Image 1: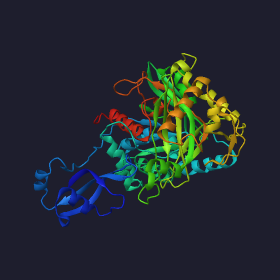
Image 2: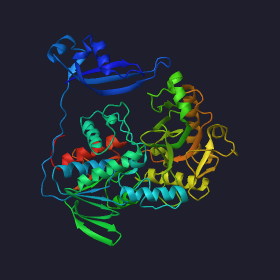
Image 3: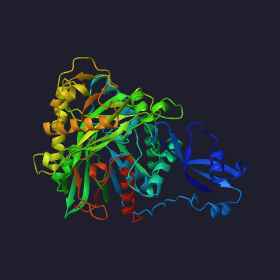
Image 4: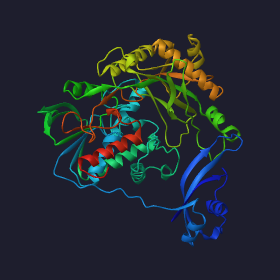
Length: 519
């Protein structure tokens, strides 16, 4: 099997064997079993939007083709990710987001005894609770957009893009595909799962974990017993009460919203430090506007999916302002997990066929903004913003919204605003963020408007976006172990990952450490 890359392909072209043959100046009849290996949209020139593609294929005389086209053609290398060697220890993983899920999955597929606990519900019951909340404003603090099977990423776009280079990425993609994701995640430049697909994927992965492990929902880690700086027992809580359990190794994949757990671990003297992160709001446009801005005259071409964008600016005050978790054809999500606190996120289904596009617009914050040296000060900073958002939304879990132009001019909006969310309330979002952040966010929005003409027109802001990443970082050594022996903090909630892919990889690395596998 051979591979050829970086071929410009017309939006209308479907005969990929012909594309390969023309590129390499060989006969089409000798090109067999063509498969897409890479596919990305090249929209740098709006009058010539096309795909940049790579393919795998078979050829009559592969050795000869490799000699004559050595710069274009290469041999496909078979991918392999070894199973680990199990031991007699009992390993408990806390949290079923991507970090915990992939850590537990890799342990279980290797035959290791593993216990996966999740304070929220299984994904089907979780979805019911979320739907009820979105309709009525009745919040379940243990089962919501943040907590439950699959973690916070389940009710998001399911983006699998990452800037890190790691051979484990292929294993993560393969695992998702084998458990029900679309085949296109294996070759798209910006792969995504979609919430509607991800719900079934995480369920299927969990079923495989259960073949060699124990998965417990509605089970919360409430305490840890430490002797001589070594983990001895954990204290768990479920619907029947509180109980102790001995475990040899404890993996903390608790996610960026496990605030009560953060406080408990701090009291137990796990080493925690402040970390910079970013806060802001969601911005929502019509998807048609984004398509036209990115694809020009090709905006409605059937071969093109909903367009995305990624913008990053530096303000005159040296603050970074950038878009994050952009959701084409998606929905803004009411993502609260604590009473009388409000936060938004974004999600898309696989087809990305909603009429709105949304993205977080974030401004960097540092420990200097927190007003305290306490290790959890960033978390308390988030809470204050979320309490203000709750108040601005009318104190009934409605989301406060404002036209971007009104926000920029600091004036009250009176018109009814249509959004992808049902429960919204007009508000002046200038009251949401500290003034210094408003100043920088406004400057960033105006700079973005220079990149995408009309970006600040006919657009809506929804607040507050406060959980783009964890506000803390746990100490861990070169073996991923905390200052307490036997405890391993991983993933986004530990401050070592950002997004589904990097979190999943962190989980895999931890499983390797625990069983002394490849790293």
